[in-house]
Image (cartoon, rainbow, N blue to C red; front, side, top):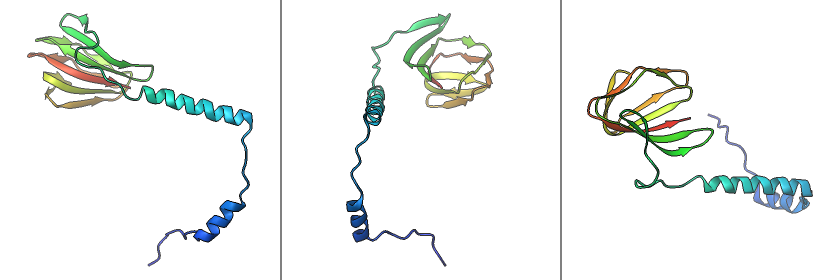
Length: 145
C-alpha cells in the first residue's frame, strides 16, 4: 500500500535555503497597501464583538401587537428581536434575504409548524412565509443576511 505523504525537507537544507534568500524591501506603494489592509482588518475586528444588554436599545412598535428591537444592522445583515403580543398575526411575506428565527420565549406558528422556546427555523432567500401567528405571544430572535 502506498501513501501520498509528501516528502519532508531536510532541516539543514531548509536552513541553507533560508540563509541564501536575499532580504527584499517592499516599495513604498506595497508598504502603504499592506498598512491600509492591516488597518482595515483592525477596524473590522473592533466591530467583531460587542454587547447589547437587556436594558439597552429601544423597542419600537411596527404594527398593532408587534414590537422590534434592532440589535445589529449593516448593509449585509440585520439581527433583531421581534415581540408579538397574544393573538398577533403577520401575513404572508417574501424573503429577499436568508432569515433565521429562534424562539426565545412563548409559542408561534411558523409556516404551519408549531414552534416553542428553543426552536429554530431557517427560510432561504426567495422563499415566502405563510402567515405567522401566536395565540400566547412570543419573542423571536431573527437574523437576516
